[in-house]
Length: 254
Length: 254
Image 1 (cartoon, rainbow over the protein chains, first blue to last red):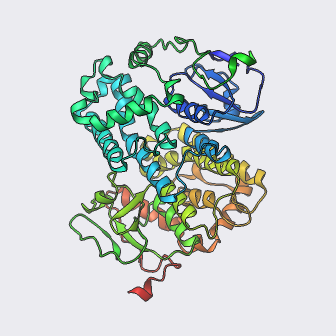
Image 2 (spheres, rainbow over the protein chains, first blue to last red):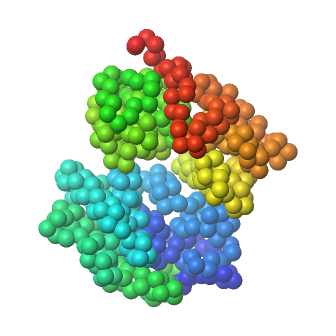
Image 3 (tube, each protein chain N blue to C red):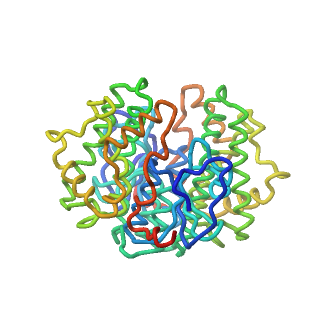
């Protein structure tokens, strides 16, 4: 197990349990899987990867070299956050994070899909601001408006009902990062209370869900990391990653 | 119901049944859903859309304006081929098109994901040949090699077992189109028998599955359509689309 982000030349830590997640502390996709692992109170080891300078062995788990990767048995892995999370929910059904209704499951995936157009606007604003156009800003707000309407029409605390579901855990890592944009000098990406009251109320509830609360970072922290990355010196190890996953009994094992 | 591709200004045909798919005859994503609808012998209506000149009402079904779209109840729709197909398989489980094992389902999705890198190489080769690089060709063949290894390691006629499954229906529309590349003057994209014997044997079995056989087009036809599109005059209506879906009892309804 490693606290720091492993890089080219670093050895693969010895396999130490049933599940192991390869992640990167600031990756929203990896976060999706960590939230689901935590929501299900699964025990797992976490290995952080330096995505700019990847250890060679990462490709033996995922030919694409992306995170998250879930090693479910020594040397055997699946990857892609949506594939991993569907697998976790099906394999470890307690608590179930998806509706038992096929149509509701489809509609949850559509919410994720519709918000994904806002992701690229976020990435442009955060990491490539000179490429920003009014179209990006419109796309971003259109995504938020769709989400707010969905929150309102469902009339439940979370999209998943009275508890967060897979849909909430899937979209949260991006919502969390969206909040850092005004601090990165992009006030036009603010989620303002006059326009997004229902969405902000939803986000407040999500943020206080224990698995999320334990892993979420403040907008200032995301902004600080983003700035380091934009400068070309990503500060992957700026956090003490030894205690961020409160549901993982790591201290006992170490 | 419409045989021709509907365009801006055309009226939405009256709703005429339980399921209605909005598609485009040459769209590989729409084809994925048509194959699943046919494999399940579901009755459905088909509405073809001119994607270069879309009817306004398409956005009321899908704000992204893409196909396929499945109208499951009048005015109510879901979209995205993977969302539609998972929904169809869950809602209409006869025959089931996915494994009952969560891990196998995840591995099937990974096959789709790994082949998807070959899709963009295909699109570049077919529609934007001047942007083609040796990297595109490598990516394409790497995707095919991964698929061939998967076919070999599973040791079954289809990836889904002794019958095609969701994974086979999801990748086929692209494999079918890959075969047109040599006819488009791209011999470096050929799926040659000396390198891909196992893959070609698999593809031959897939092509003869009745739902696929009824909908698949010859490489020459794909090449002809592609050429029309590259010239800027896509010949969407080049086929008589009234009899391509053999499992749909359309003639009786008309």
